[in-house]
Length: 202
Image (cartoon, rainbow, N blue to C red; front, side):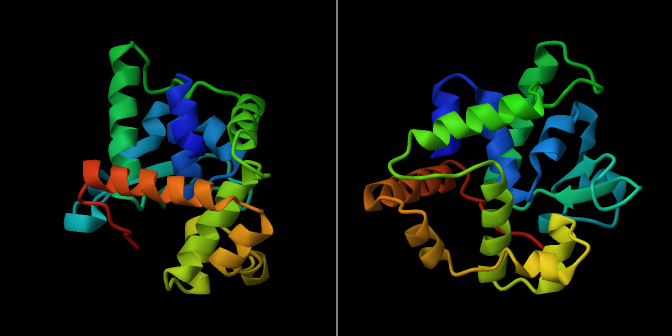
């Protein structure tokens, strides 16, 4: 819903960034630092990758949890498809590989996310909620703690496990109105219809 509101307000880059924030458990600093050439095809990195595994990877420069660059796969075919479209649009407008992927500072992303989230009934979310929610979703999808740690780039199992909680209990704690939940489910169904290959890849 937040992503949809951002796109509707013509902040399309921020809308795509929000989807990736959830899908890739991105910190806002990581999202803001991404460049066009930080988006790579997994098969181009390793020719042995084929089929469902050969999706997009995001390179994380100067990560919080290490000195070396890291990477994270884009799991959702919906997020991957929208990212490809955004990349094509940025390149058509003349952006080179070193250009900012989304064109926003950390503060601007935080502000845009907060404004869109505040418009939802009774919901109080911050950008970090995307990382929190993404990790919770992966836990609830059957991922192990090690798998979630690797995807979210956590050093400590304690730190990763902190993000686990029952999904519906979390929704209740945030006071999300039933109408908002239902609207979100309709948006998810619509996206899946546009991108029928939607799937979660490890």
